[in-house]
Image (cartoon, rainbow, N blue to C red):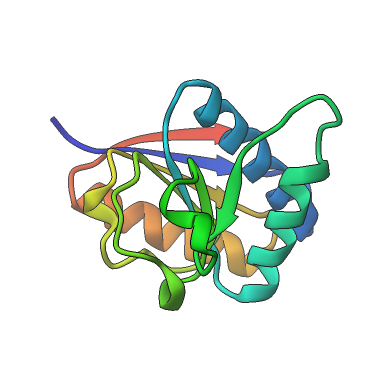
Length: 143
């Protein structure tokens, strides 16, 4: 059975649209009892996602932690960058990074968000091609 990779291509521009979608996807995974690693390119993005998970929906609670926090070992949702990830297994990789995570095969599913910007789209095409060549099951969602 091949790994499922879902690409979410946004019509909106800006980092906030990607961050909001990441929060919605993380919430959905949490409600389905899945663990998620949100992979960010930089600490600034990880901090923004951390803050947004507390505030994006008034009525929801999504327990999460940054990868560098002592509580990360038990949190269902963990946000981080390559350099601070703890050695742990997650169900889902939620990719906000422009590159493919080197250990992508250890996840059972990948959710990849592509912003509506030329560079993001080009790098997203490269990731799509890579996963296709790796014989992953690809799904494209245009939002």
